[in-house]
Image 1 (cartoon, rainbow, N blue to C red):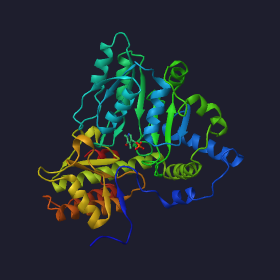
Image 2 (image 1 turned 90 degrees about the vertical axis):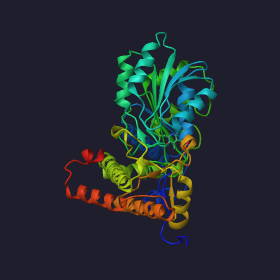
Image 3 (image 1 turned 180 degrees about the horizontal axis):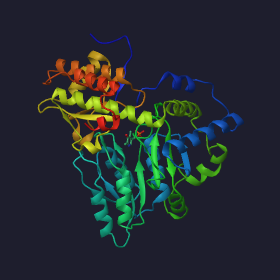
Image 4 (image 1 turned 180 degrees about the vertical axis):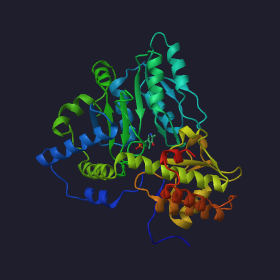
Length: 402
Ligand SMILES: *Cc1c(COP(=O)(O)O)cnc(C)c1O
């Protein structure tokens, strides 16, 4: 028996489900990307990007996935032979590092067990050792989507400051923008990259970034070949809302709607909702007697929860049961944790009942796949959400770290 009615539950940590309002916006007729209507749209979405990145500086939007935004950050700021420092927090940090290597950049890794956040003290120590300032940038993933661990970028900024090191700070907020507070200016991040299909609730296809003055200055003198990703072309007409080549204009219409939805709810409320749903999910995982992949409560991800499968059980086999029986997609374990963990996405257009349906699907899947689990996680999450509603916990943010 497989589900053919109702809707598919897309509970992977991106792409996230696209709300109807956004789908309708994308379905509007294609417009002239050199015309006045497009100029208004372009200016509006670029201003929206500044709001969500919390910057007054330059922003750019590429027709690309998040990987394209990674590449733009590298080729516009670094030169072949440069060294970058990478806290290897998980699969995505590792992929970004490999990309830098392909561009001839040397990479120095700070090892990580994929269960902890990037270690600011270790970054500070590495920078202190680097008397010649060989390290040109620290490349860090804010929310490591492969593990469900969120790093504290403000701490990393302070570590760089304490070391008085002139390196750039390149931050991947691909799965955090629109779900967790991103503070490009306050962090004094140099390039902060993101994409459309996670917290912004759009289909894949847009790569976004915020760019500091320091990064722009680096782009004037760095020696990396580039064309499509070149900031100078991209930013030339952006004050008028225009792009150097045909932009993904229908996705930009969707992005305008996404920003409208986020601003109507209020970004702080959006972030609190994510923390609440994540905390409810963790209470379910604990009730089941399963292990949360992230071992540091300060680094719990509000976007997704990585769950470790009990020994002798394959996470992908379990995910297959959930998909076949209940038409729900859960996130797979990537590279070194393949088969060992599964990931529950609770980002973007997700509310309490979406989450309760999701957790019910997980719980029924655990039973059908004969994965041993203790009490009802659904009941635990329900109680958690009721308590939040009742205001028993006066501050949702405190509840989030229980
Ligand atoms: C999804 C993701 C990426 C890759 O983005 P694509 O759109 O698949 O290219 C990179 N980093 C993080 C943290 C991600 O979550």
